[in-house]
Length: 118
Ligand SMILES: Nc1ncnc2c1ncn2[C@@H]1O[C@H](COP(=O)(O)OP(=O)(O)OP(=O)(O)O)[C@@H](O)[C@H]1O
Ligand SMILES: [Mg+2]
Image 1: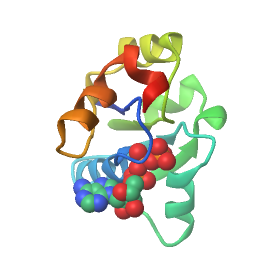
Image 2: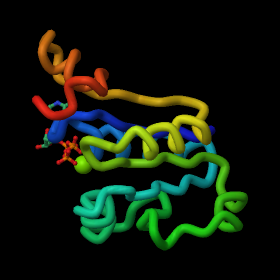
Image 3: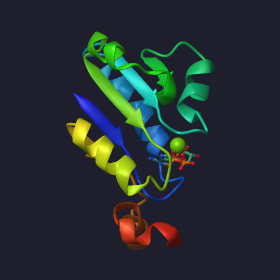
Image 4: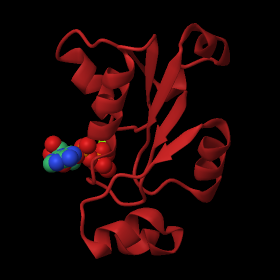
């Protein structure tokens, strides 16, 4: 399964969700967690211990590498461009959009038109 975690808003739990989903999937196969955020938060998490998954920066992942894994989870930065979102969506089986349970967060997390306000 290829799973992408994204939200237009920052600080809503993208990285936390990606880490938890990747760890969950690690019981079911080999998992690559791709850190697509320039802040490299997922890589920082991995550096703190011995993660049950392989964590790699997006810019270091090669296409040939992907076939070595049963599951791929992608963490993304806030405010992806329309092109980035389109590219990510096309290659994934599931898009996960985490957001705190308030109407304003949910609206801003899912609506491209609200990118500049969140
Ligand atoms: N389900 C949750 N319940 C409570 N706190 C959470 C939950 N998920 C994430 N957090 C907390 O919210 C904060 C932001 O989480 P996280 O870094 O995963 O967000 P993010 O969307 O990846 O942020 P950024 O846009 O900066 O990359 C962290 O302090 C994290 O511990
Ligand atoms: Mg993050």
